[in-house]
Image (cartoon, rainbow, N blue to C red; front, side):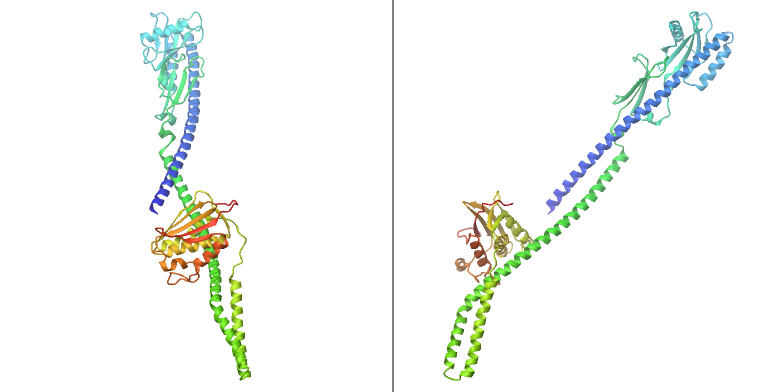
Length: 504
């Protein structure tokens, strides 16, 4: 029992673990898809914001260039006032600078100003311009870049107007999504060779697209290194385990209830079969008893009848009226008793149903189920060793079960803690069924009369069980015998094998 419970426990545990793994796998796939979708949406949003910011730089340069052309160096205060406003409201623009092509001329700068290399870089970009804005990386500030416009915007230009832009601030955002350790982003130069800011993790998935700015087509890239904690958050994992455990608990309750219902139905069916067999046993036993009683009482009744007839004959010589009446009553009662016994014998004889192909193994299994509880209460064990093929005989199924039932019941009653074995095999055209037990065996003086009615070795037995078995087996065309020279008490039943198919 403990081993069976342990196997059942581990079976349920494995099913539970499989269900948890399956649901968690589904959750992981769902979470990963959500993260990919969220990364795409968040990346597109930040890309659009950075593109708008970059477009603003073009407008600032256009305004500053117009102011410088109008006022020149003499009114650089106008340029510096506007530049201060721009840097205050747009902190990503760290400085505004006007660098002359000729070094001897004055430079207009906002703090922190430009290094000599940076100034040379501004002049280089301005000279390269044919009217469009020029962009280049700051020589001494890797995370900043220059956006340069020649001024005036013609071949006569003598100055370069430059904005120094913080690339990090260009893509800055307060969205908490990008605070995740697994999320990363970067901004590359248009050629894709140099990273202005940021570094991608060993990106599992990503987003890559140039900014929507003609003058600053910086490549914006993002990635999300999805880890186990991202796809299986602890809270959701615990919720899944709780839900699966609850489901299995409810399922186990339902299965137990269903098992109890099926067990009750099975017990009811077995009880009905037991009642049917018991009824058949009582009717057959009554038939045997009636036959035995008729045989035993036939001679006394005949003698009574003869004496009554003789008394009536003698009475004719004497007191005819008195003796004749008594003897007439005696004859009538004797004849009545004979008629009653005759009717009882005819009534108790079973009306046999037509024989049909029935399964021997099914009858054995049914008897085993019927006697299992009784055997257990007596400490007995009933085991089966059945032929590996279905075996069928032509008989009435109830009578076949009655024979097997009587043999196994006798074996169980043979002794306390009896070991009973039911085995089947085939010998030629016959099915052989052996019922053996470890009891004390049949007494020697009863072995040769064991199948006679009213012969029994039990103190409270009727002696009709084996006689009934023999009669039923013979009517099936078979034979039953008590085997000699066997280690255990063994009754052997031989029945002709049916040629008709039967469900085992």
